[in-house]
Length: 139
Image (cartoon, rainbow, N blue to C red; front, side, top):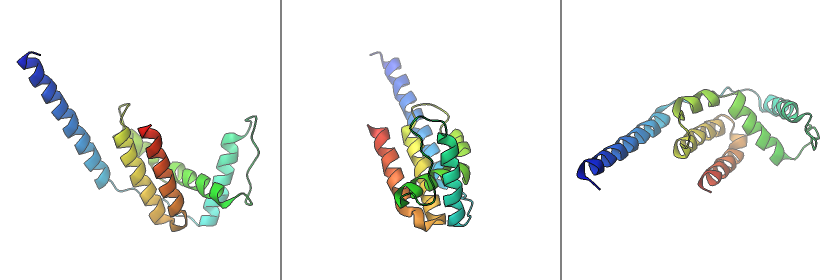
């Protein structure tokens, strides 16, 4: 490899590493706001949203308030993430390029922690989803 080419590669790698570090620091400094509503309303709205999204699918059977708590917690965390935070705008802000798993994991982690703080009754589910998302990204 020619010396000039090697120097360019090192410079590009350094630039990319510095840029990723700056983005990750930006995520750490970014304030995530979670709209707080009564948990009973979260459950109700999460069920309604889940049923609306999945309606019309071949194997769909609507959920109701008597579904398993684990299911209710899962759809509630998803509902909060997508509807009671600025999740999509935060992802767009920090994850503009494809293949940014490390950045996306940091955004998700920050969002899940904010949800767990706002809704302590969902903290276990937040940790579970964070781990599952992380595992999918390293496979």
